[in-house]
Length: 456
Image (cartoon, rainbow, N blue to C red; front, top):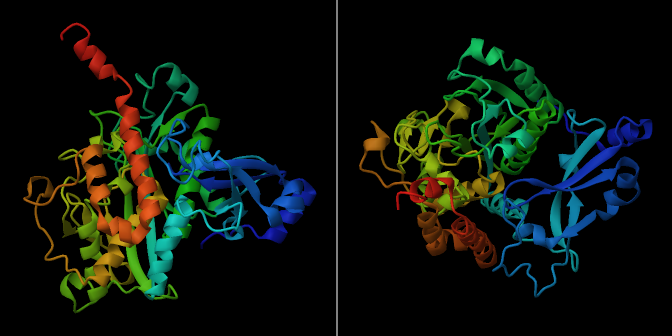
């Protein structure tokens, strides 16, 4: 049973009794993090419910360190970095049980003058693609599987150590292991129960293919709902483990000697009402309908040029290593984990798993790229060809970009991205990508110092 979201009248009663005294009024930024304000429960009903809150528009022009980046048309020093308006989407209202007396609502962003949606905001970017799909008569369902590494040190201690020489929660590879993951149940059970109570329904948790690595699978939903759940979940995992004096990372590749952390995204196309999947066909090739094949054809066609939406950081590309469970080939197969796309499921559960994104991906941008690619395939009647059988790591197939630079170049030239996102959004995202590379090159790494200090 899917947990109910928090009704407004229920929240009002909880505020009156003092059971809820704080409402997190938030929105996702371009890194997929939750930003916003903590509002008192009474002030939420007095003012914020009807009027929303304002925030500085520079928040859509920063990097992961909150550095203000140049080169954006939407907001810059010449424009004075004014406000944007955060309008609560009450369908996202939920309790946050791991924070005492707290509820949360996710906002859509609008211009202060005129009230137009902020097109470069991640939620609006995804909304545009969802609207395109619905205009074509489809509802797109997605589910994301996020992996993370769990450490015994707190975030503060990890920072003091330079995020090195940390102790993984478990000494053994945890993949499907019950005994070893039982040692971590004091945390994983709290995460599962907390998410369910927060309206983020969990199917299961499992150990993953690295020491200290876990995965918690969330129930699928329409793309916007799933992106919201993904974001609340990822933020919540960090808050829950921090409360226990520990830390978790969703870095795509924390250590080259260890398996990276992925964000496998399952997608499927349904009727406009969301009642019936259009993916299966008993008499179709590989039990895929014509719509499903064209959807898959679009995903393949867009994989390289929209890869930045799946892998937005320098570190993201270190995950793509042969034999590492992360794909290196743009191909598709039937239940084949060596490829970028894996067709799985039976009957109404027939779906495509995109294995390219890492756990560091912004779900709003990732899902938007998947929908844009899939719709492109349907519109252009693209066929994916026969499934590949064999080892995708050694196959003669197109390759996933191996560096951020390659990905930026492909995204820059992408007509698919321009047509789907619009020129302004494409330019905004492209500048963000370029600034990430520029920021990286402004630093000397530990590897460079170790290698060059004496030897060069």
